[in-house]
Image (cartoon, rainbow, N blue to C red):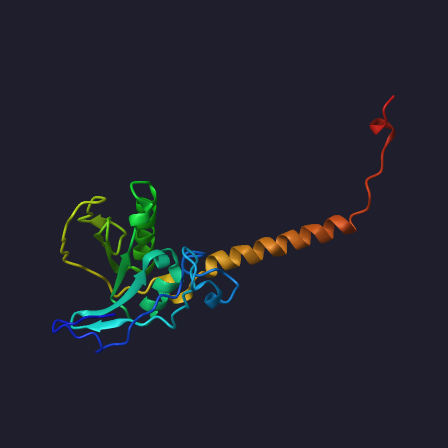
Length: 202
């Protein structure tokens, strides 16, 4: 939820997470209520449509935890007019592995795809600002206490991805299927190869 400068939390609708971590937050393909009483098995329900928060300096779209790996969510916010993307996450369970760095790197792609500034706040690090070209600024270390502030920049650029989505990947997949089908049909219609005296063993 958004808390304003007066501490009020009801001035704008809350955003509820849409992409839930499999098993931990939601067991796929089953009723979440069946697992609501079990430890480490998620019984959470999905949130609704993404809601951008409107602030004096512009609007911001929030991605919670690993929602940052889904480009369509960032694209939806940007198409709705969000000036900035925010990522809040609990990376404590990754400890000091390579996972926090991999998790953070996805946001660089979201910044490049949407040409929007991104601010990341992680309880154990890495917290940082990523500019619209995907360059990180002021990144904190893992398990280092810090309260960074950032001068955030963004753009009004509407990238091809924001406008058209995953058309390139979809087009390539369709073209590959069509070519495979054409190749299979031609192979079935081709006459069988005949052996010649030169092909026969002596």
